[in-house]
Length: 311
Image (cartoon, rainbow, N blue to C red; front, side, top):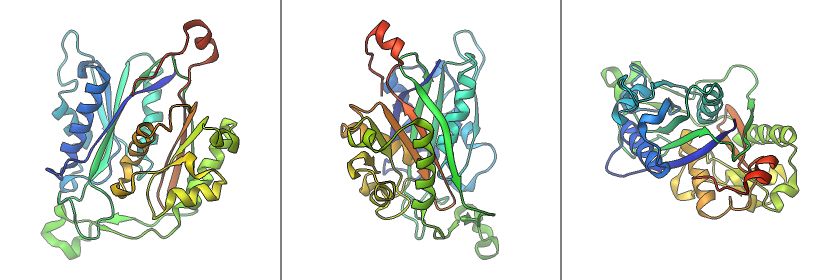
């Protein structure tokens, strides 16, 4: 059975700089909007990269799982749940979707909750030289026969070994390593890799410029560089209106960008007529593009009539 987006939410509350807290709030909102009980969620995947105090153990997913009270005990009526981190830079959330689909396809669980987002390890909301916005996002996905679901994940990467993009300079920070992070500027233009991944997706999914011109398809763009979505539209020869970027006021939400772009497209009405939504995630080292076919299969339309997807 195809995988569908059940609900999506973000959180950028100013009263905290903790990714753990922001991700928990986004996840709770996501579940409340979907009216799906936490007891029915069988998996939680964290795709966030930068976290409080540079914590590596236990897994961030386990800390968020505990805050949500998700599958913490085995008892009748509660779905057994497990969680793990899946970090792959800006593209982590899209990889998390395809990973969760493998488990959903077995029928052993009905829902998977995915979270992403980043914060400076000091949990200061505006740390100098940290280029990413402190925010978190949550996406609830589950099996649903009223959509065609997600397609193959198309990726593009830089040739050869990639240089580290973020690290802790232990020799310089000493005992303050828990609170420090050094991030270098991107060496490559992210538009190049992003365009490569999107072109592969267009070919693989049988889409062309007319689909975007007439609103049948929409491309959701992240915000890794100034004017990214406009330059990407030009590189792909797509109408600018068909490429929906992250709200400029948001800055660069990095690993949470796909959800921010999705909600912006939904709120502006860009998804109303779209049959296919392309999720794009990119930085200067890699890019990934994933098509979501939100319309029901032809046989489902004929037998059930059109049913609206919950967001």
